[in-house]
Length: 207
Image 1 (cartoon, helix red, strand yellow):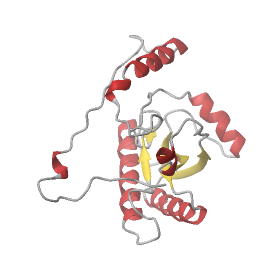
Image 2 (cartoon, helix red, strand yellow):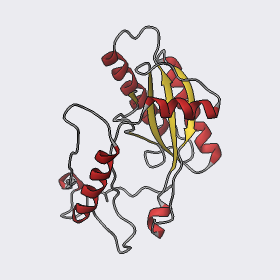
Image 3 (cartoon, helix red, strand yellow):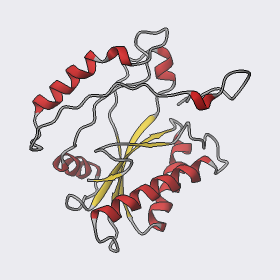
Image 4 (cartoon, rainbow, N blue to C red):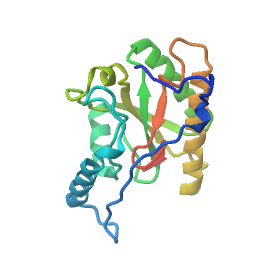
């Protein structure tokens, strides 16, 4: 996995003036009822906003786009069962997306650091899951930067009394893990090889 960051300050260029210009849209049922129609409409909206996305010289490499949606608890239950671990009831665990190195040793080291931090924060590591990905449509540069995508499942500790406290604890775990791995001095232990990003609307968020 390769990550390209802003250039350092030089001459008249200063990266602090770089700004995102993302296009965003929202499709939802006013009463929160999930449906396939919402997903289909969101994909149509995404296609109509192609002009807001950055592209390189390759037509199939860009700065990324996608939709965020609720992943059913029942889906997670079934996937966890296939992998040999159990999930508690909805609301008592968190799920997070991990963008990791393709090197198995580096990946194992980073996951080990994350596991230690989860335990130190009084929460329970339930398991990991490889996320299926399809890169047939990716351009050469996009494939070179593609991470190894995993999900982590974290059980709610006994001392956590409410959802907000659990959300806060998951945020602490995420930030501690990012900083610990970035400054560990181990090979590839940089922000470019370890990322935690939203899944089920979370940066490691309760499900």
